[in-house]
Image 1 (cartoon, rainbow, N blue to C red):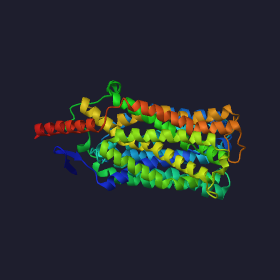
Image 2: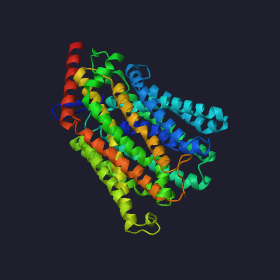
Image 3: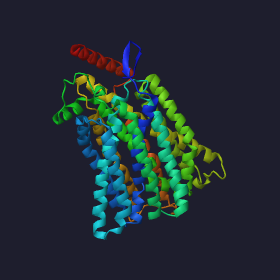
Image 4: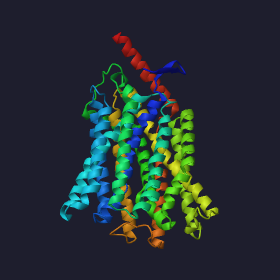
Length: 489
């Protein structure tokens, strides 16, 4: 065990920097699957011929299903102990299931008779969510064994922030500037090429994540040393009911996730850049421009977290993200011509948009990264309070609430565009910018995300695990382990 003594002689379970960097790729692996499926609405409505609201409702329902099965996934994680470890087998199984169903969705659905398309589409998405949840839940649960050093846990956010730039910014550039230019529209050839690159990368990242967690995926890192407290399925509800930090963090993080889900939603990106600004390729270019500011924001957030605690960094970033989104609404209401925002003729409008958009994307997305090591804090809080070591349950209960709320994103988008007349298909690149479409774009891209961050900030006022509290918790757990080891000696 690699430990370093700090402060009052307390030893922490520490990880090597490369282990943190490699294991963080597990989240990148699942994010690639999420990114690929983010374009499924264009496939389902444009190629398979399914209705807009139907697809939006199906996507919401499958995310709800993902949340519903999460507690069962958490129970499986908590009870899993194999010669291959607790976490590594689930990464492999989850990635294979998720990747396989993505291939089937995009390559088979449109070939089936009309009567079978919807049933097949829904079935594949449901199975996909099982695989996705298996792999994704490990990212949260394994934080407890990777490191419990308060100076190290925030480092996850640096790696995740860098990797997410590659997935979401690099991915958007790849789709908007390369695939769209090559194929001309969202067609089968485009989806096939996207799947090939995305799924191969996802599999590679999953393998590297396994390498990163391998040395820590052992029994001596699981929970308390004496394991006198056994947890059964019936114990979960009392644990959830009595863990206020879990409740508040889940509510806050789900609002953050809803905000960033709307900001990055493929249809909202089309509405903002392809219609309001009249240049869809600009979405990829803007992503490239904001890479450095986003990374600097992540580094600053982690620096704050390492100095003053994760909670302080989380709340600060949510505030700045919310104010930036409000600033974007005011900006678009004041300027006369949104099409004046162009990199070919850079003026004050373009500069203001770049600054506000970079701040909004950088700070609004930072809480969704910081929250992963915070879930480990909540798990340690429960272990210290009750003796129950249930990182799987903590991570998946969090995911359940997160999925419950963030599943609203596709339905919200579908409902808003349906209200303004887009009932059979989503707004597409080149559509005429009407006053209704202008208002809907501002609401979806900035208004509702800002509201989500406001709710998130309020919830965090009732979250008690600041840096001082976590130091007490880690000291308490260390003392319990030392006593147990002394008795067994």
